[in-house]
Amino acid sequence: MKKISVVFFVVMMISVLSNSWAQDVQGYAIGDIASDFKLESVDGSWVSLSSLKSAKGAIVIFSCNTCPYVVAYEDRMIELHNKYAAMGFPVIAINPNDDQVSPGDSFEKMKERSKEKNFPFAYVYDKTQEVIKNYGGTRTPHVYLLEKEGNDFIVKYIGAIDNNYQDATAVTEKYVELAMDDILNGRKVSNETTKAIGCTIKWSKKTE
Image (tube, rainbow, N blue to C red):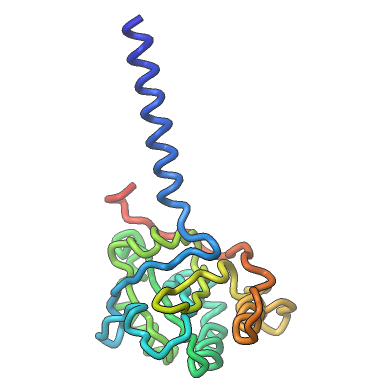
């Protein structure tokens, strides 16, 4: 009987821990308050949500250097920033990939890519991967559109930039732009979530 009790206890503990882990990696849902972060940008500055004093929100995009999906979207990311930053919604691109697993995503390589593409937006490094864990991002690119309400940044849209990563000229649904149009016109976002298409996150082996 004691052996059965021990086995039952172990099974229950594994179940509890598994459920706890699932909750931890679930990340944000629509309507959640995004917690602040402070990450170093390629220009040497430190970027946080609280530093966006005059902003009305932010277009947070988990990105990187090496993913072909991101490369296909980089020009569209630049266009989003150029269009909406002046309206109070700057793009913040966050690289969550561990550079020991993916050397091409190192901070130095980020600087090179930013200079090469002349990124007009902040490109920051989530070196500890705490931000990507909080958000629950699973792909690069993965978009989280935040709107500022009081001092809080509320998640309004999660997913893809649009419905065709291969060809910008063939896009028929610009998900982020449609969500922005709803927000700017005081409407509830009509399509709050879409499936992010891209590369998996290169997690640190230390946390696996």
